[in-house]
Amino acid sequence: MSLKDIWKKAVKKPTCIFVYPSRYISIPITSFLLKTKITPNQVTIISFIFAILSAVSFLLGKYPFIILGAIFLQTSYILDLIDGEIARYKNLKSTFGAWLDTTLDSIGLFMICTAIAIGYFIQNNDILTLILGLLSLLIMASIGVIESSSETFELIKPKNLKIKQKIIEKSKSIRLSKDFYVGIYAPMITLFTLGPLLNLVNLMFVLYLIIGVIALIKTSITKTKLIRDIT
Image (cartoon, rainbow, N blue to C red; front, side, top):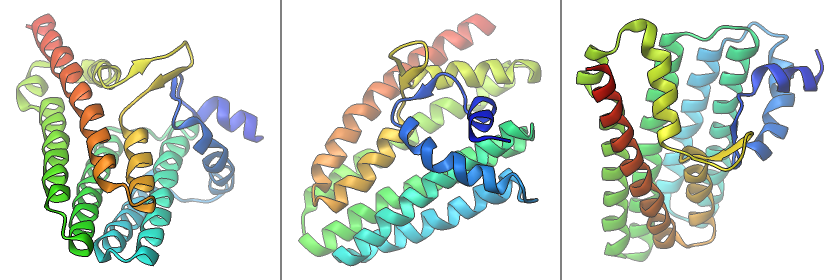
């Protein structure tokens, strides 16, 4: 079981260009974990715990805690890659696992976004940060609502759920080539890591809002087309 074999079997294609460098960290760890009995869902939960630690650290606001928050966030992100790699390599993919991963990812990002905004406000008394943070949360929530609206789940038969998921994933990305695209999740993690570290939180939120609005529009258009095709 070489790293090349794991990369070939466990990494989805096309892949987000922002994710690609992180695979050089996640794949070796996955190689080790494949020899254990740890499950993808267990890795997902551990990833969520690190997301909580990241949010608490960012909330405290002092720079040493911001550094910790960034480290915890990147650790959570790497583990989020690893759970998928293990699931694909061992063929342990499941509807519950996909739901758990998506749900905990969303909750974790909500907590981290909120913590960064509040922590920065407490330290700098900048009301603009709270406003931008709130708008970012609204964009996150809006994308989530559009993706998981009950009307569409009622219309789509179980056998077509995978097709639906792929369509929605593509709606939030921009294809660069056969092997690479730009998604929204990985750039968000990058922004939420660098923004606090560089003391550019307001700029971080502005950039996320631009990316988020584009993703929201694309997701809305795709979801509308999907519903029309099914009905």
